[in-house]
Image 1 (cartoon, rainbow, N blue to C red):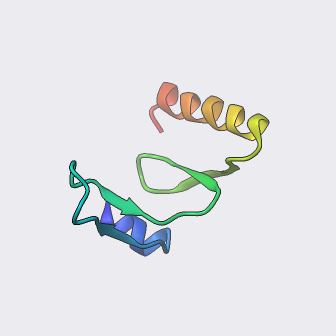
Image 2: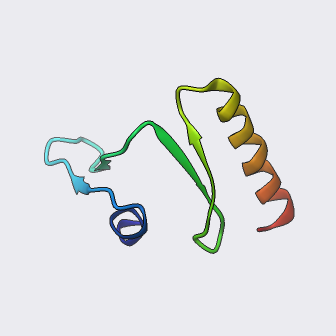
Length: 68
């Protein structure tokens, strides 16, 4: 996960010392990227646009159905 976040996605990822779960804190903007099983970016979606988020869900379901 760290390699993908800090490499291809060019974001920072650090463990919060005070986080009870020890979950990483990933810095990110207002977009979601849909990534397939091979690590290829299949789409970018603006989190502030509900129609685009609906498209992301549809596209993610397609990837699951087709095994891509």
